[in-house]
Image (cartoon, rainbow, N blue to C red; front, top):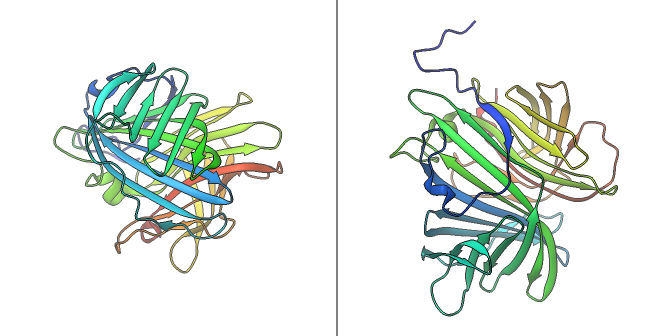
Length: 312
């Protein structure tokens, strides 16, 4: 049995579900004593045969960064030159939704929610409206030197892009770390994480499954999954068997969870999102289902992030 230093528990998370609705100003509140380090909204949309993956980073009242990957469904996704709004936003309630809005008479950028809906608008790129998908998830890691808190929630969305109808999902995550530090320089991102994926899978029988699975070094492991038919699992026990292509992108990952269930990530081909840097993670879309599930998938999203060099 491992003996840890005082105040260390091997980076083992406490995992659970939580309510989907986060009220106005929620990022101002401490989470398990920790301040928010930043937030990401991301989406995965299908529009006229095109897969569109936007990623928006925010920090309190700042719209920090906007990335957009795009490509024909089944092919690799390329980072476009989309330049979304960056700067200090108006924090306000408009049309009953609270969030960030681009200053000015025309709201070219908007990212706002209420108990029942989401609005995300990026000028010249897309506008989507969403409804909540199931419960949100949360975990916290008690550690004397590097504690961590995390929350995430999802919506199913519809909208328009370049005159074409689109459908898909949006996720929203908040990361909480000790004051003065950040997520990207944390030990979790810089050393412990091996694979972390968030996913939504819709089947032809109308059932939708959403969640997150992470396998990392030491005790940094968790799974948070909910199905619309009532099944759910939250656990801090995850093992996996991955395979990668010649460039380090994931092909197949078999996960064994602490409740005894097995889940599989698989890539149908393409859908790779390359980002620069020798030590950068590999991003890829894909499909996540329970192992041996034979139902037909009508829509899938999986933001799979892997560090292949960190696997034995």
